[in-house]
Image (cartoon, rainbow, N blue to C red; front, side, top):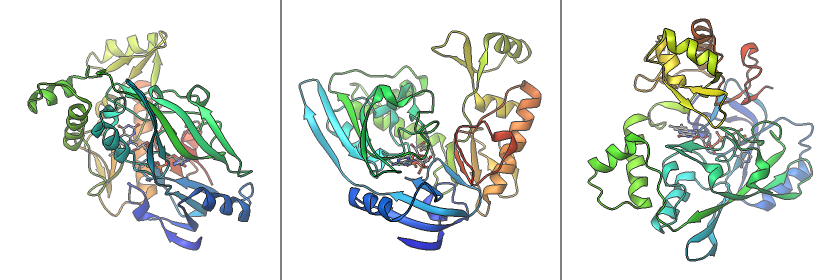
Length: 354
Ligand SMILES: Cc1cc2nc3c(=O)[nH]c(=O)nc-3n(C[C@H](O)[C@H](O)[C@H](O)COP(=O)(O)OP(=O)(O)OC[C@H]3O[C@@H](n4cnc5c(N)ncnc54)[C@H](O)[C@@H]3O)c2cc1C
């Protein structure tokens, strides 16, 4: 355990300057038990950190950073068509995808190349290219931080939804996830409805589909489309796609025929593209000081080097206000904002205010 100030800049993908009062690396269950026994977490600020790819530190953090580094992937059961794979929370997510696709285990190939850890993945039910993590979660093991007790959740209990789960909402900071068990398959079931996947598969000359081929195509698409956090600090999509009523959607569509929107399972609501809203509000490619909106993807805010967390928040606030004025829609951040006291974001579900 280290007492601060401990630098956080290299520990999150936005690469913003911030320090923590305390820092501990958790490599095994024993480390977690010892920490829970030493520090009264009911009275102490703490933040559980995985890969830091969905975290924005606005200012110095006056508590402990619990950095999850638990290693290990194992196949715990394998049948003709099905397989259970268990991975510890500290494993890089993409390493797990590579492990599975290389063995012909399907289900997470569309989630290739998403940064972060296995433990961070269920928090917002990661999703990409028509697949969400919840579709393959079997169980999640966690530690109750208040007591140090172990618990196992079935997927149905976790409140998974679009970029959310109970871990991000009503259970926030109650559990430290230690492992994830995925129920994957060995049958040829592929999700390739997205046009971008089909175009890339054709470009790559793929004649026979496989989990590996789809994973390779998605890696190639993502490398073209998204900024590499090692080069340009960012946390992927900054905002959720907002849900609006059918009447609101029709009103918008009448005024903005080019509006991009998607159907949802809920027949009363339509999901509007947040990237479209931000671009239509005039922010795509805008740069204010060292913070900006990525020129190739309006949903991604970037740190051009030298930005502070407050710079990113100021830009995000301007976007929220303009989108609200123009479209009567309140954008909610997807990124976990740590250390902010932001009036207009108080209903966002990713805020840790200290
Ligand atoms: C370039 C880029 C592209 C991205 N693309 C996508 C995408 O396509 N789809 C998508 O869904 N996301 C995407 N993201 C967001 C991000 O990669 C995911 O949300 C990822 O799962 C976050 O994992 P992490 O370990 O980095 O989480 P962190 O940022 O470390 O933490 C995020 C949240 O999870 C909590 N947490 C982390 N680990 C644990 C644990 N073990 N137990 C309990 N709580 C924990 C933290 O307290 C925090 O609330 C992208 C990000 C970047 C930078």
